[in-house]
Image 1 (tube, one colour):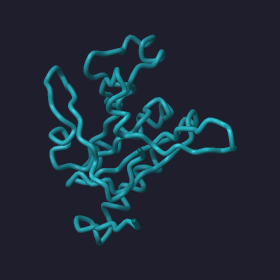
Image 2 (cartoon, one colour; image 1 turned 60 degrees about the vertical axis):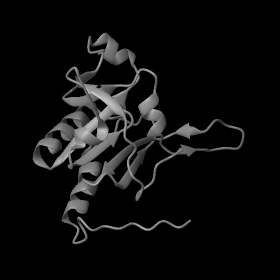
Image 3 (cartoon, rainbow, N blue to C red; image 1 turned 45 degrees about the vertical axis):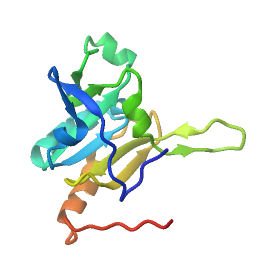
Image 4 (cartoon, rainbow, N blue to C red; image 1 turned 60 degrees about the horizontal axis):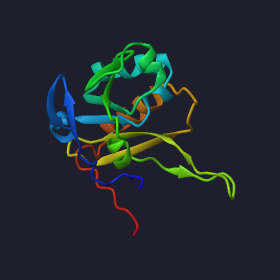
Length: 167
């Protein structure tokens, strides 16, 4: 099931630097940008993400099940790794991505649905404030996500943003 703005971000257990923690504890009351596929970003996109995470008050995280590029680069890991400075958390069974599933788009009747890649912007209270979708394999840059994030930070409603959803 896809996640939407206004919903609480699902928590999950993870291991970072050999220590068990949870997504909620790791966020530690900070903004977080969670991407479902770090390999959907260009190398420049990875650098933009890391640079922005040093400039703005957010944490950056991406789960990875496995990918030949990571394995060939010698960066396959048991708990955490970094791809071009982009922090990754191992998700070998796909449990994290199952909870953070993106939108499925059907382009034609009878054709399989296409899973879109997602970036979720989560506020300090753990509420998803914005989702950004990308078509798979498009090698996105990170600047559009940073622009959306800074708009949320600069909003006069920052800190009290309530999003109502139609039932």
